[in-house]
Image (cartoon, rainbow, N blue to C red; front, side):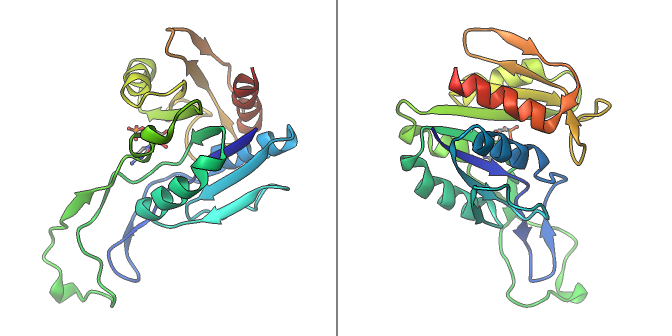
Length: 207
Ligand code: C5P
């Protein structure tokens, strides 16, 4: 298969030195890219700003903002059979971005934000027979919210995890996830290496 994967956070600049972002490190998305490439698939990895090396054999496109990620996904998707949206896309961006560093005296203490597009929802008209996999990172029991997102975003699989659980979430080597599909089936996987979680997700796509 040709598989498109997004990974990492997005970074929404306020000026050349300041930005809004989140705690995603890209580990889960890069593990997916590695697992897919090792299984013989052709992988395009759209990566937000992270410090990880590119897995062997993977075509990587680096982006910064959610709008840049949407653009890269829109261009790459038509040639792919599956899209795994693992990136922690920033939901909001500053309304304006200054080309020079804002001075404290120019800042009011109130930051005006505008919504970023939801990438999965935006590219849904291009879905066709492609398989779409999403992630739901929640704080606390994640499956109810994940089931809602699965329906809402028209996904074939959603990977739910509680980012506050021991050994799960951002910057860890391991993850504990539950796989949910539209037919209502749920598979709770034990705590395992992110690469092992990634192999399970790629195996699901292959099946
Ligand atoms: O709604 P929420 O952000 O929790 O949904 C998570 C899923 O949606 C992830 O698969 C993420 O990559 C995707 N997403 C997106 N565009 C956004 C926000 C999230 O595609 N702006």
